[in-house]
Amino acid sequence: MKITVVIPCRNEVLYIEECIHAIYNCELPSNTEIQVFVVDGMSDDGTRDKVNSLIASYPTLEIVDNVKQLTPYAFNLGIYAGGKTDFVQIVGARHILSPNYLLNCFNKLSEDASTWCVGGRIDNKYINDVGEVISKAMGTTFGMGLGNFRTLEKSGFTDTVTSPMYPYWVFEKIGFFDEELIRNQDDDFNYRVTSEGGKIYYDNDISLKYYVRGNFKGLWRQFFQYGYWKVYVNKKHKAVTTMRQLVPPAFVVYLILLIPTLFLGQTLFLLSAIPLIAYLLLDVAFSLKASPSTNKLFQTLITFPILHVSYGLGYLKGMIEFIILNKKPADSQKRLSR
Image 1 (cartoon, rainbow, N blue to C red):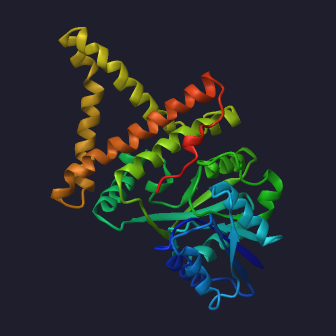
Image 2 (cartoon, helix red, strand yellow):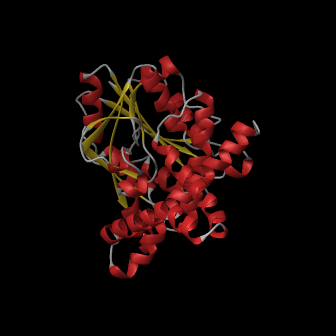
Image 3 (cartoon, rainbow, N blue to C red):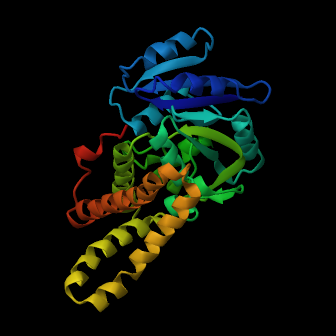
C-alpha cells in the first residue's frame, strides 16, 4: 500500500521540521510505503535548506517547486508528484500530526466505502501572547459557529475537516483541487465530495497541533479572505454550501442598518440595538471563559468581533463583486495572510 503526503508550504522554517518528523513518526499499517512531498512556494527564509537537511534521514522526502506560490497549485502538484497511489494525505506546514493520525484515517477509509475523507481534531497552539488569545477564541462555538469542525468534541460525519486523507480514486472520480480558488479550495473540494454521495468523517481520537497566527492584522486578512472566497465557491456551485456562513455577513448588514436609527429617535434605536447588546453580552461571557488570563481579557473581547466582522465584510465584498458585478476575484485578495 502507498500513501502520498502533500505539504503545501512557503516560508515556514519555524514549523516544517517538526511537521515532517511527526509524519514519519506516525504509526502505519504493515507493508506501507510513504512518500512525502513538500510543495514549496519558493521559500526564501531557510525552509528549503531545512527540508534538504532532512532528506538524508528520510529518503522518501522530496521538495517540489511551486513557482506560482498558491495553495491549490501546491495541492495538485503534490498529488501529481505522487503518481498512482492508494491514499493522499494533505498536511499543512503548521500542522503537527498525532502518532495515530495516518493509521486511524486509513482504518476508517478502509472499513467504510461510503467515507471518502477523514480528518481529526485541531489543537490550536501559539507562539506569542496574541496567538494564545486567538487560539482560545477559535476553539469556541461563539468564535467559529455551531457545527464547525474546529469545535466538535465527538467523532462523526461533518461537512469539512482539516489535514484530510482521501483514497486516490476520489480524485479520479471528481477531479482535483480548483486552482482558481486561492482560498476555500478545500471547502469547494469537500462540497464536491458530499455532492457526489461521499461522506466526510471527523475523528476526535486523532489530532494535530496547529500554530495559529500571532497578530490581529494577519487574522483579519485571513478571515476577510475566507468570507470573500466563500462567495466565489457558492457562485461556482450555485448553492450556499453551509448555512452558518450567512451569520457574519448578516451581522455586518445589521450593524450598518443600525446607524441610521440613531437619528430616528431614542426608542427606535434602543429597540434596534437589542441584537447588538445580546452579541456584546455573548462576547463578554465567552471572553471570560476563553481568556487565558485577566490581563488578556480585552484582547479576547476584540478577537471575536475581528473574526466575525472581517469574515462578514469579506463575504459582502464577494457578493458585490461576484454576484452583482459578475467580476473575477481581485488580485489583492490572492495574497495570503502571514
